[in-house]
Length: 410
Ligand SMILES: Cc1cc2nc3c(=O)[nH]c(=O)nc-3n(C[C@H](O)[C@H](O)[C@H](O)COP(=O)(O)OP(=O)(O)OC[C@H]3O[C@@H](n4cnc5c(N)ncnc54)[C@H](O)[C@@H]3O)c2cc1C
Image (tube, rainbow, N blue to C red; front, side, top):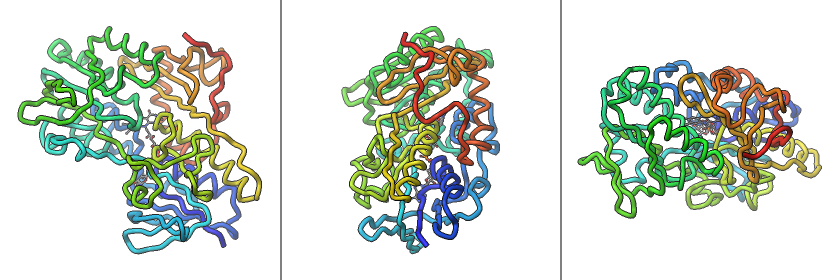
């Protein structure tokens, strides 16, 4: 019997377990999935909790609901990979030898990296990247009667780089709905030179922010959260005042990967950006937020990567070469408030374009357009995630590579 061990039962690990279990002979291949708990969070739903658009109970389910039969699911904290002995060790002192290892351990939040951030989180500093954070922020938003809200990004890279943009657009809508928008100042503070990593999309989002009366502060490399004065401070001495700070704390990969000697200094897996293999480790494959590949850390990316990885792992198991290459394809809906959303589609080489998605000329979604149908797509995504994507089912007409059909630059 040979062993495939999958680390992480989030988006990527669950998709891979389903795809590989369907394809591989049960008498020949054992599949083990390890995660620290049995709670699968639909993370895109975290954005909606602070605006009372979704309840926390609607976005958390048991992991076992989505893992296939014929897979061993182990709940334990992963402690270390011994790459020389092809063995995974857990904190619970279990050992899992592997022939093939798939790493899908995502991101961890590291607020402790910024002095004052953890302390501020006892008071008026918030995040919405965890269930607890999103719940606490929901209460704070509900009680907010006026003042300055700052949406702040600590550093790059972080998962779902459009989420803070969506947060400020939804905040503008939310306070208009509550009839107090004139009492609320909204500021977006980023270490980047603009709202997003891609110049074309940045132009579109910045002009929307201007129309919505949202201020943008760029090139802000945070050093401290000054909880006494309610300010954040940057390396070059700039200060931004807040009444309510919503922050994206530093995101890092798993510490155990760093301790196992397979990552860069921020604990991201050193990964071949086309083959999605761990650099210098022929039997270790990586997908999702854990990689250091230069595209967005997003569920859509994780989904496209799972298709490439599954094809390549099956080929290599059969002694053939891994021919599928990942192109960095990313596809994200961006909520803009008032039941509308944008959609962007890009890859390693290609900036977001205008056109229709997924079918050229037909759509129904509008690339770089701010439309109601895109908002419907974002809402529908929850159902698609639980019922189609996690089960590793391929979506007709949406392949892993970016299609250029019917699209053009603006
Ligand atoms: C607020 C928010 C909004 C988002 N919106 C979107 C969106 O609209 N569209 C989109 O495409 N993406 C979105 N994303 C991003 C998307 O959710 C992630 O990119 C995706 O879930 C990554 O999948 P993953 O498998 O790499 O990591 P995850 O799904 O996070 O899974 C990692 C798993 O590894 C486990 N793990 C880690 N370390 C250990 C350890 N040492 N021991 C045991 N288990 C461990 C964790 O418990 C976790 O279950 C959003 C994310 C957030 C936070």
